[in-house]
Image (cartoon, rainbow over all chains, first blue to last red):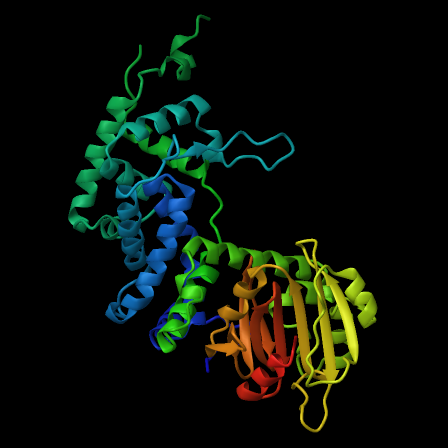
Amino acid sequence: MTDWVEGRPLEEAGLIELAKDGDVQAYGELVTRYRDLAFRTAFLITRSAADAEDAAQDAFVKAYYALERFRARDSFRPWILRIVSNEAKNRLRSARRREGLALRAAEDRRSGDAAPSPEAAAIEVETKEALLRALGGLKENDRLIIAYRYFLELSEAETASALGIRPGTVKSRLFRALDRLRDRLPAERDSREPLEATDE
Amino acid sequence: MSDRMTRAEVERSLIALGSSLEYPPAPPIAPAVTARLLAERAAARRPAFPGLALWPRRRILLLAVAGLILLLAGTAVAARLAIGAIEIRVIPTPPASTPTGVESGASLGRRVTLEEAQAMVDFPVVLPEALGPPVEVHVAESVFSSRVVVLVWEADASHPRIEGTSWSTILMELPGSKEPLASKEIMAEITLQAVQVGSHDAFWISGPHQLSLLTPEGEQRFTVTGNVLLWEQDGTTLRLETALPKAEAVGLAESIG
C-alpha cells in the first residue's frame, strides 16, 4: 500500500506525493517534520499553548485537504506556515485567556548544566526582559515580523508568506517594527559601557 | 551618557534573545492529525458511525498521547515491548531472521492461569464461547497502574494461525475507559472500518499493515499481520487479533460475553 522502506525515510517531495494520494501515514511524517516550527509559530501568535496546539492541528488537517492545490515546485515550509499563521490568527480573534507574556526567557541554567551558547550568554537578563516587555507592547504585525525573522529565523520570503505580504515589503516593515521596538526600550546603556564610565 | 540602542544592537539582542527563549513543549501533533484524518475518512465511508470524528480534538490528542506513553514505557525495556505494545499489537512480528515463539512469550507480560488473572484485575475476564479455553494467559502491567489481560489460542482447522505468530487468536482485555482504544490502531494507514460487534461500535483494521508511532527517538514502525477488531463492552476495552476475515471475526467477538 505504500512505498515505505524501513530505515529509509522518503524525501519530502515523495511524502507530499504519497499524501496527495491519500497516504495519511506519509502525511503524518510531514507533520512530524514541521511540528516544532508550526507549534512555535502558532504560539507566537496565540500566546497560549492550548490554542497553539489546536491551531497547529487544525492547520495540518486543513492543509491535508488543500494539498492538491500545493504545487510541486513550491516549498512546503512557507506554504504550511501560511496556513498555520492564518489558523492561529483566527483563534486569536475568538480568543480565550492569553498568557501574560508571549515568551519567557529561559531561566539561567543550574550550575552543572550545559553552558549557554555564546549568543545567549552575551545578553543580560535585564535586556532580555526589557526586550520582551517592549515586544509585548507592539502591535501584532510588528511583533510577528520580528519574531519570525529573529526567533524562528525565517527567511524574508518565508516571513512574507507566513504574514501574507509581498516579499519586497518585508525589509521595510521589519525596519519600521525595529524602530518602534527601540522606541519602547528604556535607555539604560550606561552600565554596559564600563570602559567609558570607570573612575580609574 | 545614556542613549537608545542602535538598530544593529537591537538586532543582535533579538537574535540572542531568540536563542534563549523557551517555548512550551510541542505536543505530538502528528498522531492527532492522522487520527482525525482517518476518523474523518471512516466517518465519510459510514456516516452513521458517531465515533472518533465527533470527538473533541483535544480529547483525541490526549488519547494519542496516552498511546505514546504506553509505547515509551514499553521501549524503555526492549524485552517487554508488549506493555507498550498494548495498542500496537501483542506479539512481536519479528523480522524473518528472528525466531517468533521465544520473544513473543516474553513480551506478553507475566504468564498466569486464568483464575490468577481474574484475581489480579478488577474487571471480569471474558472469553469467546466460540473458542475453547485459551492456551496461555498473561497479565501485563500498564503505566496506568491497571493490568491488562492477554489471552491466546492456538490455531485449529477453523481458526488459522496469524502469520508471524504461534497463535490463531489474541484477545487483549483492558480495563475501563476508551483511552487505549483510540490511540494507536487508528494511526495505521490501512483500511480502518467502523463496524458493529453486537450493539457496540467497533473498529476493524484488516490485513497486514504497519503501525507508525512517533516517539522522542523518532518514528517507530511495527508490522501487524493479523486483522484487528477493537471495541468496548461493559466497561472493558477489547482487542481481538485474528487471521479470520471480518464477518467471522465479528462472529467470534460477539460470542464473548
